[in-house]
Image 1 (cartoon, rainbow, N blue to C red):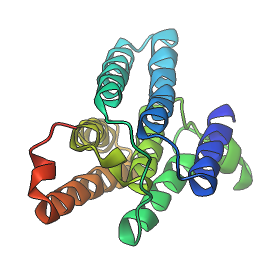
Image 2 (cartoon, rainbow, N blue to C red):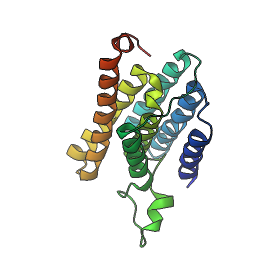
Image 3 (cartoon, rainbow, N blue to C red):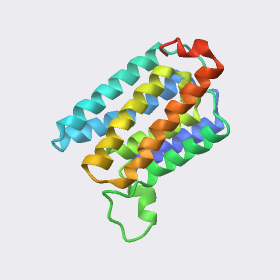
Length: 189
């Protein structure tokens, strides 16, 4: 339940005070990824432990290199799709047995398992215009592509195709933004 409240507070903070720093928000988005790594190590899954520790470290390094500026909230389809991917991660139904639909609202494995956490992080990233960082967006999308492939192909979790859609959306937004501003694509942040 903690990570559900955490994401809710982030969404409220973004909506109420969009003058937040991209560095601060990026750092806050890394924390659920570290949680996935810690739980993976604790439950004897070194693959997820290593991948998510490396992902969190890489994204934290990217955050440190971002210029000091405020977030820019997306509009139109990226904003709407961002909310969809946050909602998907929020209520991720796989691995959860509940007798009532409301159980998904508070007990889905957001912040605990890779796919729902990546989906919510992609959603939040879309909402804040990718932190205006090509490196952040591409790194996050790459991890999501890997885990959606593992989920769909190896674990037969068909709903993980939504995570692939999130990764594709994030890449499409980067490409479209780069087409409008070619100088953006030449930067690593």
